[in-house]
Image 1: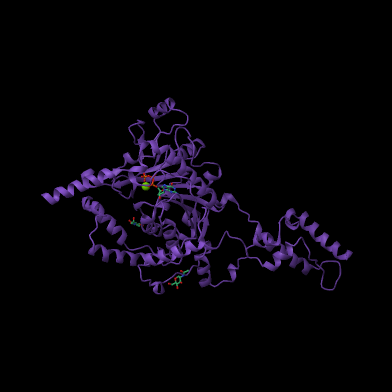
Image 2: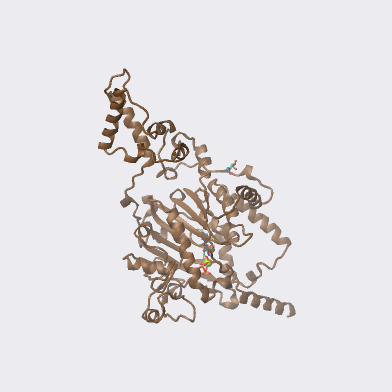
Amino acid sequence: MDLLIKVKKGVQNKAQQEELLPTSRNNSNYGDEEQKKNSFVPKRRKTLSSLMKLTVFSLLIIIVYIFWGSSLTEMTSKYDSVTNLHAGQNTKTASYKTKQLTENEYYDHDFEDIEPAVVKKFDNGVQHYLISQYGTDVLTPSDNEVYAKELQMVLDASVEKYDLSTFTGSSNGATNRDHLLLCVPLRDAEHVLPLMFKHLMNLTYPHELIDLAFLVSDCSEGDRTLDALLAYSKHLQNGTLSQVFTEMDQYEMDHSKKSKGTKNLHLKYMNPDYLKLVDTSFKKRKHSNYDKPFRSIQVFQKDFGQIIGQGFSDRHAVKVQGIRRKLMGRARNWLMANALKPYHAWVYWRDADIELCPGSVIEDLMSKDYDVIVPNVWRPLPEFLDGEQPYDLNSWIESDEALKLAKTLDEDDVIVEGYAEYPTWRVHLAYIRDAAGDPNEVVDLDGVGGVSILAKAKIFRSGVQFPAFTFENHAETEAFGKMARKMGFRVGGLPHYTIWHIYEPSDDDLMEIANKERQNKRG
Ligand SMILES: Nc1nc2c(ncn2[C@@H]2O[C@H](COP(=O)(O)OP(=O)(O)OP(=O)(O)O)[C@@H](O)[C@H]2O)c(=O)[nH]1
Ligand SMILES: *[C@@H]1O[C@H](CO)[C@@H](O)[C@H](O)[C@H]1NC(C)=O
Ligand SMILES: *[C@@H]1O[C@H](CO)[C@@H](O)[C@H](O)[C@H]1NC(C)=O
Ligand SMILES: [Mg+2]
């Protein structure tokens, strides 16, 4: 017995001296056996066939429910109905074709393989004893080898080393194989999800380098954003989503012919050239990796108590902007904090309600090598309202007038751009657009809008965030831009590189359209 204890102690000491053994690991910190088991999740990636990998990967859609009272069974039944619905009633799933995934990036930066039996040995408070084969008290070289190998297995499973200098983000991220986290906040967004997913698939940045993170919050009663998101995500990761959309689009076309609804009445009043551009953009030949699954998808659901309506007129009232923006700040920070991993070099924020955007937007923004960079955001309008409009006014260059204005305000007041109440005389990125201008031209900015922000991950690691409080009389993305600047990072925008936000008719616009329709009928 003495002999065994001596051997055991010798091995433990040696490992500790060489700093191989975390001191707390063997003196179990766990409350019970169950906890102990749960803290080790074996993954046998390397032994899986590609096909199995695919299946495992599509299950990697991690769902985090943080809201109270969502019963799992209720979810499952809703989920099924949405899946069917989105597959165009009679599901043809069997005929969908999937993809083989071979890129190493789908599997890197993940916990290493472990054998549960090996881990158990080391995690038992060292209740095993190493004795050489013939019972001598000296470990033979081959005993040592086995021991070292097993120990390494345990450490690999629980300790990951990252050299953050290799994840700083480079201007040629795709060639450099930079991992990117793509964050999308969603609220009452079911109707724009197909649009959003088409744009995600259209991204030419290698999908195996992109981790998607969605945050669904504060949706209205009966809203099905989460269910639809899960259904689409599953198809996306199976490489079958575009086939589902083809069916859905066909279904819609067949049905809209029969029933001419008033839902899209405003289309009659839009610029035909713009409508044609949208049509051809979606009909264009898809890039060769369009259907490729992303590295991972995480879906988070957490409410932040947003009470301001998501209708167009509700969310644009000046009084509500400060409160709304601060809550959005909290939501963004929360998503960021939960989804950002050490291996991400870039973070891309994107709104769901974008109608036109080059698939190369990530590479295009990256190539400018700014710490934070945004494109220009416009939106189409009915022709009776000039046909188009500079839309995102949150990207701007600070002005003396606005700084003076800020001095007259309370510390907690939030300036909102584009409202008569706050004459800032700032230069807005949206207004300095020249449709024929050089899309590569960059201007330095102070405030940025949240529609499409590419940022190096290191800025978040050094503390830049989306203030959910008043920071220099701003909140959320505008304050984020200011904060990044203040911390010495470069913030820029592309005045002549434009992405197009969808047009949602406001209450006034709808009335105007109804008026025109009445006139047309009379005339
Ligand atoms: N998680 C979460 N997402 C939200 C919330 N409000 C809006 N979103 C999402 O954030 C993105 C932008 O939302 P919009 O309502 O268009 O707000 P906005 O871009 O500030 O305002 P616009 O200038 O009108 O577009 C969309 O993807 C929305 O679905 C919210 O309270 N929580
Ligand atoms: C993926 O698609 C294939 C082919 O259509 C199908 O057989 C399989 O069930 C799908 N897997 C999942 C997890 O949906
Ligand atoms: C998809 O990306 C291509 C370029 O990569 C672009 O021409 C096309 O307009 C994009 N589609 C949409 C709907 O914006
Ligand atoms: Mg929007």
